[in-house]
Length: 205
Image 1 (cartoon, rainbow, N blue to C red):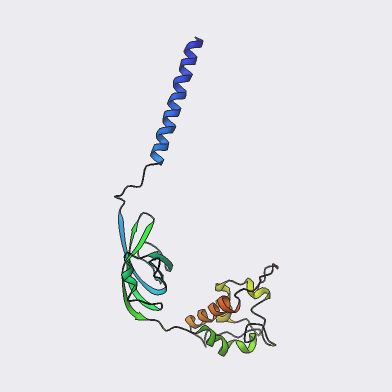
Image 2 (cartoon, rainbow, N blue to C red):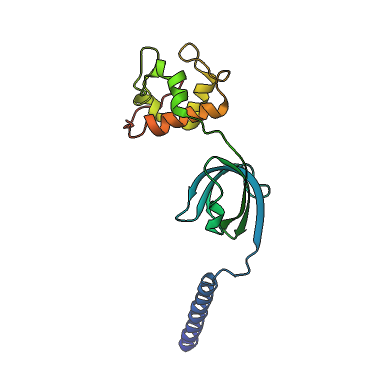
């Protein structure tokens, strides 16, 4: 009887090991080269061109059937595609998706977007209250220190757009949405660049 149980245990153990090995073999199988290729088309604005690595960054509209509007950086099928476009161009493009891999296969310039000067917009509309370099003035808080550093891009845009009562005027009737975004980009990427963000309780307006 003992021999019978011992033999049974050996058989069961062997089956478990065999099953585990088979499972691992399945997991290690390479992705089939026949993975379906899906093609999508949309339009957007060129934000960055990386010629060295053959990559393109496009701020695109919705890509029907694939993703909502966002900024996307992916490689191009051929670096030659980058020769006839520049940052700020409006483009129609096509991408191919194979599994999780995405590549730009076609891109055509359809127009140009005026390059907005965030620094000039700031100088004209914001410097009087917030200082020439964001250091603050009698009318406005500093943008390079304190709680201004804790605000997200969305929060900055909302505050510039809608204002804050008597503290800050609204600019929605004076500046276009793209001009507001440009000046917020300037504040966040230039004036606040390198500013030390101190830990403090979350600020709310």
